[in-house]
Length: 341
Ligand SMILES: O=C(O)c1ccc[n+]([C@@H]2O[C@H](COP(=O)([O-])O)[C@@H](O)[C@H]2O)c1
Ligand SMILES: Cc1cc2nc[nH]c2cc1C
Image (tube, rainbow, N blue to C red; front, top):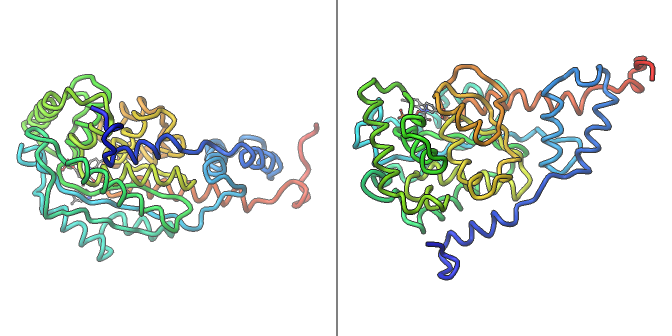
């Protein structure tokens, strides 16, 4: 069922997706022109050069801005944990939110290392979503409102890192990927925070049953998000969309954040061109998902933490790329002889 005739909240999201801007070719041309003048052989900074270009294309300006880089961490709880799919108890989600607020988590230390801002968005932790093996996780109004809430994360930033915290949400990510891209349930599940082999079997079975239950609605990506998703995934999808509309490049974290973004990709395949994959998570299905999306990770550190940590690590590289581009001298200004024409 589409809602075009009834005017329900998903229509607003569909209209926004229709109107997303493309890359700014003038800013890219200005970036290439300066890149060619910097005191280094052409191409010698490798992918860092493409990252500068990507920043210019999606910020629609040259030189790129990288002063205000913010890590947004969205936290949610999931009814599907009743299926025995998670290694840790659900209360860890709220406890880790407190840890973020008290500066004690891994992501806090990464933010301090690279001078990044951190914003934590707590999403009704006391009211977990419905168990996706039994019901739709959210209703349409709540899913759309949560996407709208996620859109607020873009305020006051030049570059946005998108991450999450939510016990059970690697099961949710797997269900969304299986719902959007098909294959077998076991292709999309992995250990998450470290579930044992029996738990992994329960996880694949839960994903298989959830996708079977909602199979009549899988051709609409927003319905996949509403039925198989969670609040932090809806908010992340909203944040990634808002960033595109406001010309803010995005660094995606691991498997869960990428699964949320994949909903927008399924709506239109150019919807994630303003995103880079910050890292390749050790959660095995992340590689498969990035291949589907055509995204190449900036880092591969064997991390599998979530909470925005991989995106925040990559932000250090992205900030360095912008500084290199803006701060280096040119052959002319430094009096360095260029190669013979
Ligand atoms: O996004 C990833 O690549 C990722 C991989 C493994 C674990 N996580 C984090 O671990 C939590 C979910 O794991 P689980 O086993 O409870 O589904 C959640 O808080 C995520 O931030 C995240
Ligand atoms: C301790 C802990 C920290 C986390 N950070 C992100 N997800 C997490 C899951 C657990 C269990």
